[in-house]
Amino acid sequence: MQYEDKVSLSKVRLDTAKNCLRDSQILINSESFKASANRSYYAVFHAMRAVLVFDEFDSKKHSGIISEFRKRYIKTGILSTEISKIIDIQFSVRSHSDYDDFYVISKNESINQLHEAEKMVSEVEKYLIKLYNE
Image 1: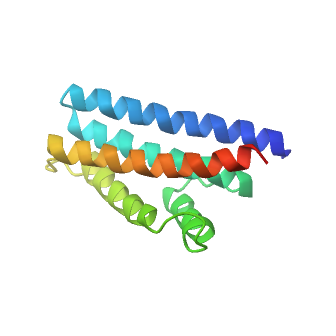
Image 2: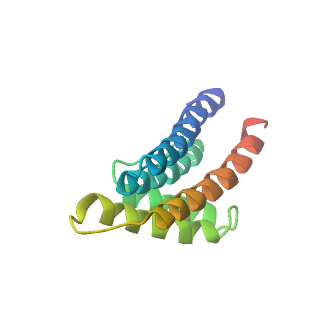
């Protein structure tokens, strides 16, 4: 894949992440807290995929994306270790929200999930902007 194609695909994935953040806020405003947690997680997920396109890596499994992202960008110090914690919490809350019938998430928890996802997407975006300009 040509570099400019990687940049284009990365931008599409980053835009998807930002749209998920927007949707998460809309869902909080609508008091749909479980759905908001889902969208916050997917913002993080698509941000990881936006970075991994430069390594020509993708996976149908979320665990594959997370593992590869950590190996290439967190363990190497390219991105902060705080992101790893954000990923863990986002994944856990999303899983409970989507699959545990009795899981309850409060408005404050949903807002926190959104803010953490925004932090992660912002850090990734700053890194990607440098790559886009190379």
